[in-house]
Image 1 (cartoon, rainbow over the protein chains, first blue to last red):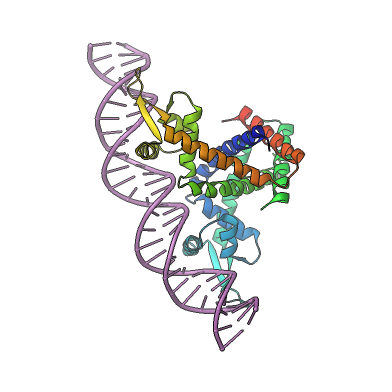
Image 2 (spheres, each protein chain N blue to C red):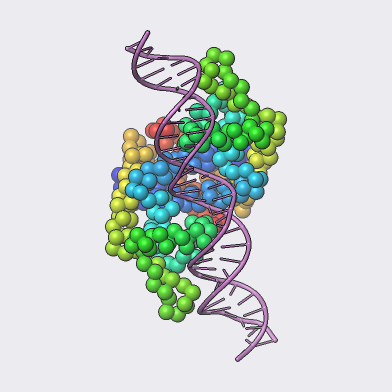
Length: 144
Length: 144
DNA sequence: CTCCTTTAGTTGACTTTGTCCACATTTAAT
DNA sequence: ATTAAATGTGGACAAAGTCAACTAAAGGAG
């Protein structure tokens, strides 16, 4: 693989680290961390979500996840319901309050994306989108 | 801006967070954090690099940066030389040892990129590269 | 020059985040 | 039946990051 291409890719990685960093610092406006937001999001997206799914998807230590979930439970953002078929598992659900918070975070996240791209034309935005889909498709196909 | 496009972009952001996360956990193989690696990298790329440049580029708190740099200095990876024209500034340089470490990290990082893309054809890799350049170009043009 | 502001960096005290290891349970596998 | 693997918890700790107060130098504006 060509050195020049590797450099371009690494440059993109540095660049996109910064972009994501900007998004993440703004999430803190809600008193919740990006990780907590991601967890709420994943729980809402999945059916029969268990802690271990989140551990794998988000690459977080099991014990740490356990504590985060306990915190979210104490804050009444999520509920645990133990599986009837496997007593090791707790299925995770958003409470009403959790859903409301996630809605708020989603609106804010959409707004962030809007702001990053405002100033670009429809067609430029679409070029970016196509490029993102392309990158994801190729890497997904290959790994992960 | 279309809801569907925003969702695609946010999906890419989640996806690429994971990709970057994979890279970053592997950096830890060298006993140095990603942040430390980035700092060495930036110092090597810049002429007359000062702490504040790094604070801005990497979005790190001034006090924290001060401590990181002191640590790198104690480990003899960098040196500070105070500016002759402005006594507030310390120019940062890699020591021989710092350069050697950065070389090692660069080799390892190149290898990581290689591994992520191995299995894809030349032309697929180039499509990814083109897509990355496109994204960076458009966002750079617009912001940052 | 003097007063005020800005820039650069440091220090102390602190919180948040993340890691490691041992452990208890429950299920799956041989 | 015994062993191994999966799920989750808790303690103890280390790393990462934050906040406010501070020093010191430089850059003005009058």
